[in-house]
Structure formats: structure tokens, C-alpha cells
Image (cartoon, rainbow, N blue to C red; front, side, top):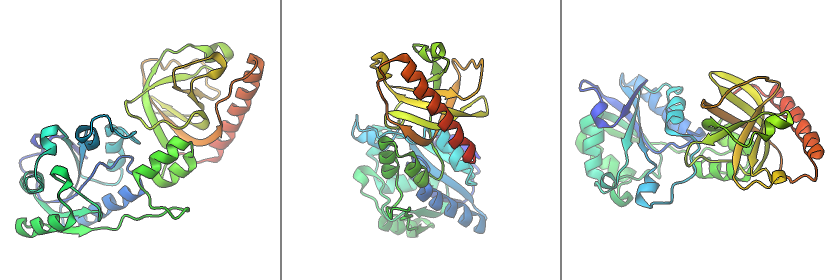
Length: 315
């Protein structure tokens, strides 16, 4: 899959495309539906499937300070999109200037001149251009003049609770600590990424050395508590017990994400970029009266996390 950071990186001889446009944060099951449809139609039309997305998130540019918690950073999004069979991802820098361009300018510059769109596939609520003035009806009208078609796909994929899947729903479930619900929306466990940094090293002193993850900015962090999941480093996926919170037993104030790789000895992960996948919520964050009480509960957490990860097939 080709990855283009801006229009200037698109090859000059790029042929006709089937295109879908959006933020695609999390690449949840609704997103997967529309992207897979674009890939299918591209194969039928002997064209290339292209996903157009933006960086940073448009809301941060239009309304500074409103950046939503991200379900997946841009590189992870590209990996998930690539797995669906897409030929190229175009990441457009979303600037204040770009946000003021008209829908007609966007269509001409991106869809017609750069990507030579033959078909554009979107959900019914798709909006584009300055002040979100463009909708699927306008897109179809412009397509008739510029030799591309528009297909509107119903994205109201519903889960066991009967609620349509969306990035907003997934973020809410993550924030509430409902990682099973979030996984239903995403189609996989929720992941947090970042670089391992040195913390207070209390886990090492207690016999449970943890990787203290300096998470990617704006990451969607689960509610405080202890979770079962996996820690992935240098290509190896390891069952883990994960703590999110401030370590109240030690009167901590900084909120951290720490993962203990179960039954692994001598791991040196400092400075490495790692991924933490959350499988299940085990318990809330507690303040213990003694170190012995904390150690007993930690041993129980690790045992339960091991059981749950053993029972679950890797995502």
C-alpha cells in the first residue's frame, strides 16, 4: 500500500480511483464496511482504492482545544486500513487555510485533479468543505459534472445493544472502562501506544516490573483501573496485567499506563515504542492499607489476567 503525506506525493501517472474520505479514527466496524466496499468496487472497475484522511484531526483546527481522544494514531490507522486491501492512503495536512476551502475547490483539487476519481463512496452524513457546507447531494452533483459517481452507503452497523457503531461510542466505552463493549465496536481490542519511560520503579521493587508507557498525545485512555490485555514490543505479543491511574497506595498524582508482562524476566524496554491492547476490566483503582495487601491483590490480578488472555485468541 502506498502512503502519501500530501497531494504532491501522488504519482503523476496515477490512474482512476475509487475514493472514500473521512477521519476514520479507530477504523471501527462501520469504517471497515465502507472501506471494504471501496476496495470491492475498485476491483470491479479495474481502478485503485484510495482512502483520504486528515492530520491533525479537523476539530482541533476548526475549534482549537477540542481534539477528541484518539482511538488510533495516524500510523496505526494506516496499518488497519492497509489490512483491508486498500491501494493507497492519502493523508492531507488539515490547516486553517485548508479548512476555508470551498467544497467545489476540494472536489476539483483532490478528487478530480489528483486522484482522478471514478467513484466516491461515503456515508449519508458525510460533510466537506468550508463550514461543512458540502454534503452527499452536492458531491453527487459535482460528480456528474466531473465524470465520477457517488455511492452512499448506510453505515448504521449495530451491536448487541442496538446502538449504531461510531467513533464517539467507542471513545465513550473506553472512557468508561467498558473494553469489551469498545472491542465490539472496533472489531478488536482497544490499543494504546507510546514509548516506555522510567517511572518510580515501584513495580520492580515489588516484584512486578512494569513498562511505564508515555502515550501518544490525545490517546483515548481507559478509565482508571486494572485490566487484562497484551503488551507488544519488538514484534512480540505478551500477556499482561495493565494498570491505569495514579497509584493511590503511594499517593501518586500523575496518571500513568503501566503494563506488567506476565512471567517475563529481565525485559529491558526503555526507549522502545510499544503497544498495549486492553482485553477486559478487572477492578477499579484502590488504595491499600499495606504493601502486603497490595501484593496479594496484584498476584490475584496477574492470575486473572493470565486466565483471560489464555482464553482469548489474539486479535
